[in-house]
Image 1 (tube, rainbow, N blue to C red):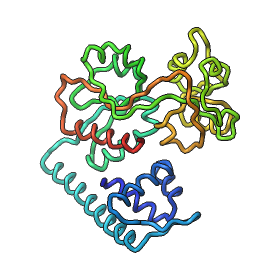
Image 2 (image 1 turned 180 degrees about the vertical axis):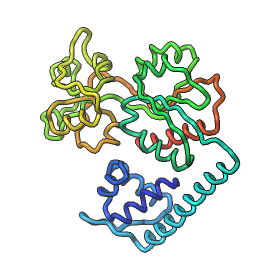
Image 3 (image 1 turned 135 degrees about the vertical axis):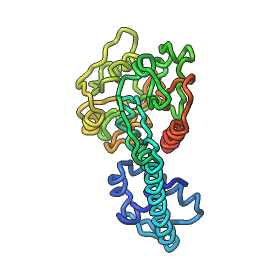
Image 4 (image 1 turned 30 degrees about the vertical axis):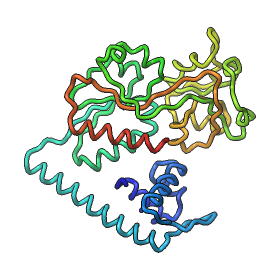
Length: 302
């Protein structure tokens, strides 16, 4: 049981709605429902009475939420005391440089950084967003730098530093690219989209997706790009409103607030998510903790 999960429980109880609490917590309704369900299984009790339009705490739920608020208060006091004592002892706040990809920064990064800020008061974070190949073969990693990235299998195979073992990429989750379409699109009921047909469908693509789309088409084929943008949020908004189709995946759908259907593609491209680092550089306790936070966050997507 994580402190973060108890905070989600408190939010649901205070707001009285999973959908509104999910919006307040920047998490999908599906993801928040799963967290509450897992808490109920772990505790072996029912926390909420559920109706079509409302939820309310059970008697046991009232007790659990009250204790959760007490624990949260104690946890915040502990962090404050740690920060005060560290300052008194002259310890420097943690400095960390995180290299990340566009997909990670638009999905799980906010929640990872929120957890870091809670655990390490006064932490100094420098976030740099780059394309996966740039991170794998273009940056220098130090004891307090790490990459939190998404990377396709073909980009990973092409990386000289990964193939030579000079860098290590720990995979915490993998999924496959699919075609994202609006729920009212004629394509929403399709079981499979062929590589040949994909080339004829108007697409909304983000920056890095333009490099991957050719791996989903027949050799020599060109995609029909209706919109090329730098924002994942704008791209997904266009897809959900049936202005174009686009690329999606299990992870993207988990974090997205835009409803859409995911249709399997004939050609598969696997995307891996995790942390990339230099194995020759000593791994600090802070980085070990960071890896565990990223891994735990990605476990929610499964």
